[in-house]
Image (tube, rainbow, N blue to C red; front, side, top):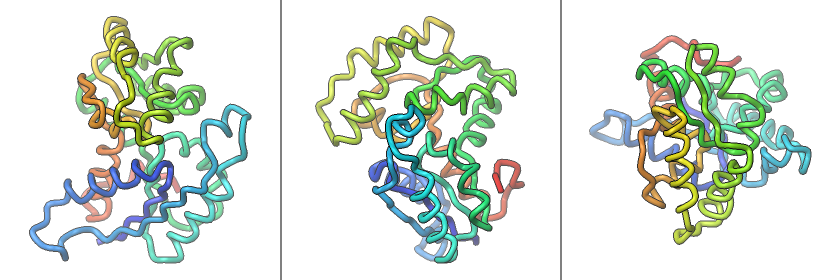
Length: 236
């Protein structure tokens, strides 16, 4: 089996969630049947959304450090426990010699396979503003519905003030109203397009038809590590 390298720390809880999903989705009856993982939980990577919005340092240098550490430690390919970080991949890939499995691509493929024609996107302002998901989805004929501009902050606040702050009592009433509004606008399902959002769904018991990007990445990483699928979702 190939060894998975996880670029983590964005944030730490999301990294643990990805690891857990890989372990739970792996058919194994003993330790030796699980897939080897190397994890760099680099919590010092600067905030990706702030960088995209011109409000903070670029995360690329720290991402390169992490990618190189994983590569030198023996990872065969890398997965990133952060959707927004994928925007910076063009700066990372030329400096490493192992491929990256794209969370954006595997999640888009899942939405297509499940037959959805219109999906809502629950992600950071950074991910939404770059069009990472919109471009991929619309190229496959899937409409992407994002929160109204004046309500996008509700998702950001849940991510930063809720999950990242480990606030189990965060008030999500406004978020639930937003999901209903997006459903009324035609969203058949919601892409959990930030690795903190699946954690939020569990933590705050949000309800809906969800496509968990973290889970889709975990399952794709297992298949690739076990060489069970072609590498059309790899970026090299």
